[in-house]
Length: 275
Image (tube, rainbow, N blue to C red; front, top):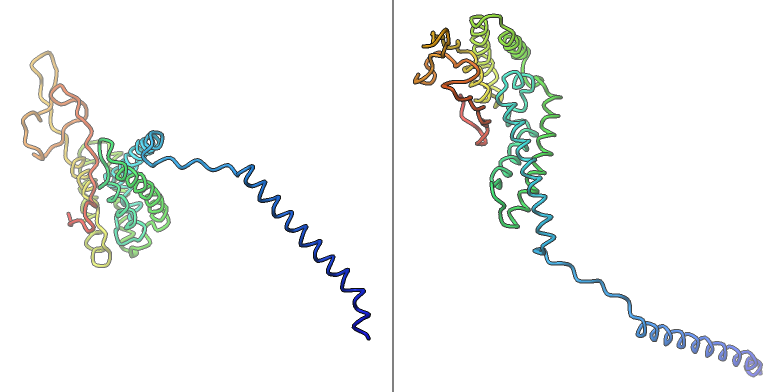
């Protein structure tokens, strides 16, 4: 019969299957033996987050974050105190500009976490992250302000901006105190007119520190009087009421060097009051 003729082929196939199964079983047993005899090296457990080296590293990052915060605060304060910079990059004084709004929010978050002494670990870590975010937001806001310039203002308002810049430059290069006072007074009127015009459409205003700079430099210097000894002179400012109509001369007042004013920020709130 035909089925009897297949017997000659079935036995070799069965032997081949048995050999393959035995080889696989032997290889599996050898691998298992090798695994038990030479186990894979285990990774050491991670150090806790409060380990001494981790704390020291965080302290270094916190110190760097304090320097970063001081630099951003200084640049922001210099901008708000410089009327010419305010007019050249008005978008930085407009919280309605998205990049400026993001910076104000990020800077306020870093300001809330800023401490003079080293804080707890979680606060220090948040402060580092907040200052990094504020730095990126400040760079983006400055770049956006450089691109926007006065594009958000009308043609007449851009003319007022250019006029204000020229008046401030004229005041800086004035030959006499009278010319300087007149230039600052004219610049003050131009800025007030610009605010009235732009305020109907934009949430823009001159920061208070910039106004204070114009008011301080726009006052005439206090007169001098002869001192009690051989031609020495002294300012008539000792005991005078602040804002009495003149500004102290540069240098020393009352024998002590006058300290530089600390930077002030007009955007301490989301929408600062009009000045």
